[in-house]
Image 1 (cartoon, rainbow, N blue to C red):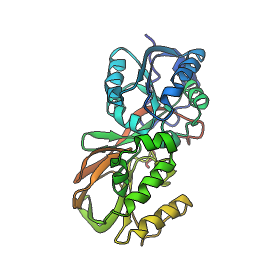
Image 2: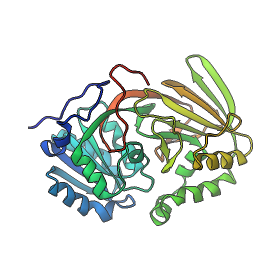
Image 3: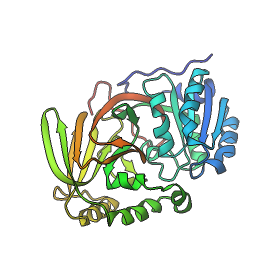
Image 4: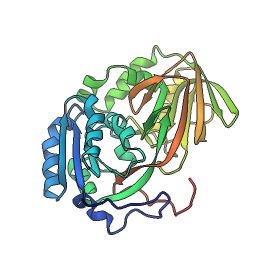
Length: 326
């Protein structure tokens, strides 16, 4: 059986001539969440494009039940798949990333969801044709993952108002409206949302403040919007952005400035960069990973450097030089 190209953490560039043919040299699995916004409509098209591109699809799983994503990825890897092509949104990525972390298996992403924040971070085109072409070109990178307890995450973890939005039943609205559904539900939730006491503990330092929303970012996007432009999946640290209370109008001000790509000032937002920290809240808050609620505070958040091998898009920046820090 053909072997994937090996690349070690800290290598200068994964875009070697050998990478371009990886997708056609190895055993591949196509796993699509057909409950994602475009999954059912584009599964056959994805299969056709990959076949014509020379990808050897030895495992094909169109899944109506997203709860089967993890077991399907696990079974594909056990069956010898060296490239897992996952079609879906950020929730689909969140569902399977634990199975891919620290493995000699490459992830290819077909952005078929609503927000596709992870695909945006990786510079992957959002059209099916562009995403498949990205997989065929096979430009590889080792990227960091975040970690909340036993859960890895690729993009963001949230608590506060963002998690309350995720905790609402968005599925039908997302399929109907697409990305604007986040803003609509957010506006509705804002009326009943209350600030909470939040303590960030890092290396013995404690930062206590009244908060409305906390974003723990490995990637740059949340809900399809550029939420943490200073974050990087190769920085070996997380970016924590806290929108401060007590006024709920602070949420609207922070959202507006973020939408305009202007940085909210310190009166509105606290920013911390950390590789490992603990977050405590009073009262306890729901915690969501890439839009899926996984638990409640308190939590420990940490970074897992170079934990995921992934195919990145043409707009993804060149890797840091070997040995450079974040």
